[in-house]
Image (tube, rainbow, N blue to C red):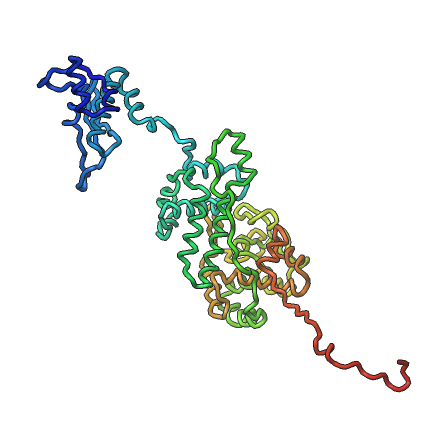
Length: 455
């Protein structure tokens, strides 16, 4: 016997039953119908977790037309759950499982406005970014790192560097892009600053890290990429993660010379040139030509032109320059070229450093053919006062600083092969020319005119 369950939504169960008896819908003492709240009051239940303890939500187990399901009733109130079970069963009998479930929980049928995951987004823009694979992976790593940390997971595990299992990357790729909102990104920034504590040095390092990761991750949302995605009808969440992001004031990043380049080079010639000629070549190219580590690793003898006094950085089958502007000529001192010529190979296609180590096909993952040589050169530099995380890059900065002092910042920028002058000004050039107001001369009284001179 079917009850009008809509009554139970506005009146108490006692009132409903009295009304049903008056309408001859129920006989006193009869067995409750599945269409009654009383029936389901005795049958709703709370499942238990495998580890112990009850689920707070009430459920009803229902079978109809060969289908049996545990239906969550969306409440921890037993009376309310009984009423929902009654209403659900009535709808189930009238319109079937799909309609009944949709009526019970409308949100089940509402699809998220954007279902892109971090991994989906990265794959969609991979071929749209227009940058070399290594640069793209730096951008992708920054986005994954921020997404993971906003989800409360740090990337401290060494597994993030595992190129085979990619455990860390896979976990980050499953996160929903729509959850990476500007507010969430801003909270991540505040959390990083908070973890740095009150130490000014740690704070400055944290601000620089924030800016670096945010800038790299934001590059995946450039105007160019967004236009291409729009043409492909790819729907992105709004607002985008880095909309309105404010970078941190990170203090001066300008290089300050702390080494004596002359003494360092003399010591290297005395201690390294004969015992470890490959490391000597690395030091020469880093300090004397300002080459990056990857450029040293990929430099061929065909790029060393002693007659013209230059070293040319050019792409080849196993090397790709950092940017288009990174390809080009560096003018170097004849003595540097003379030192290199002692080791010159007859084959122009041989690499300058460690010619016996073969090249490996370039890929997104950074690989240095001369890794062991770089480590030896770095160890020697650290032992001789070149501190910091990247001693070889410090030599490149010293190169730029010396060029700037000898000529000007424009010449230094060209020699460093930067894409724009602002990079040279912000990070590399150390202005060593000292220009001061001649206070001593100004304080001196004017000399009296000598005899015979006109006043």
